[in-house]
Length: 507
Image (cartoon, rainbow, N blue to C red):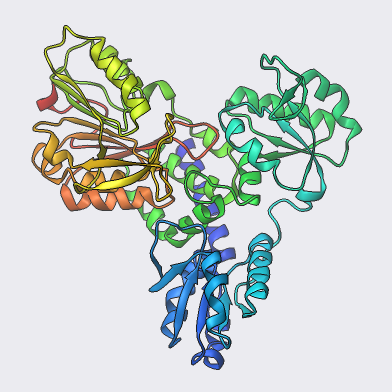
């Protein structure tokens, strides 16, 4: 047994133990339903793990389910066959059903408290059917905090949100250049100050937003020397009910558990041991919020999608590539492609719906006027149909389709935009599976290589493999984790030939 194979089996056993411990029992839930079978029913927290596992069976035993009350899955119109209502819709309309009962699937302390207050405000009887669980971080709201590396990539996103909770922040700790003496409106300490003074606050927690392995190792050492409990930022994000990417971290975890058997079976489809190690490490990270698992399987960011180097484990470029960049942002991957291909390619087509980003993307294309019209930028989103969608335009990498978007964008199908395709990169904020459906002709007839982001939603990886299986046979799959500390940059590499080499028709 190889060292990697041994590690893989250890990870798999840990995943299975967690799944077995958390599998909610159904018998107790079903036994309580006959007494309310004829009453109007609301489903509260239907997207919790217990709700996702048992919701359909519960609904099948009831005669009058009015609505599923959920503020998180705003992209869904129905949950378990019932119309989705927001909590505000529930408060506004529940009074029409005075003898109704709310079946509460929440199990976290935060979720259970929210459900209890919601039902009390609506004067609706609450029936909690899921076992309660302990808070992820005991006494979090009562303990003073240090924020370590609060200006890292994830620190800038999450630190301001975490401190909105009723907590007392002692200091934000980092050594990055700063004009003032505060970070995110909190007092700033240097790492040396933390090392010298943190021990005066023995009951404090240190939320570690470190992104790089170097930062993480330093934070761990400083906290150990100061006797301060260190908490992974991903655990704090989940405790506070914040989003992993577009789903709350706890929902991301629950949806992973819901289809865990399918995730584990996917290991048999992966070409190399490192892909299996990456899959299991990523799954265990989702279940434990321990980002060190991602650093253990971290693949070089410089090789993401394809490489300029000869030793890539992702993709090497051929000399006749027809490259499509879906979600081109300001053009960094287009620039990388030009460098890696040494300007030996057939065509580049880049799609970017955000107008701010698109202007900069056009600048990349315009900077190469000597190219004979084979670098084209298109200001549209990629999908499986031609339509118009609401879009949240941020001018960043996270611009995305959203019902709350302030502008409208046009969508298109790759089958209607491209004649040839040998290499497809997709990072389009959860629309990847739909984009593949809209490229069914190209994928079926031309068998391109594909580098597809599979992290925006918990079940993206399964949905995308399922979509590819409908379109092509005989593809080889590899998986790489290009982010060392968060949910980002899990990429599926799909190729008609094994390994990193281009197929003959691209070379």
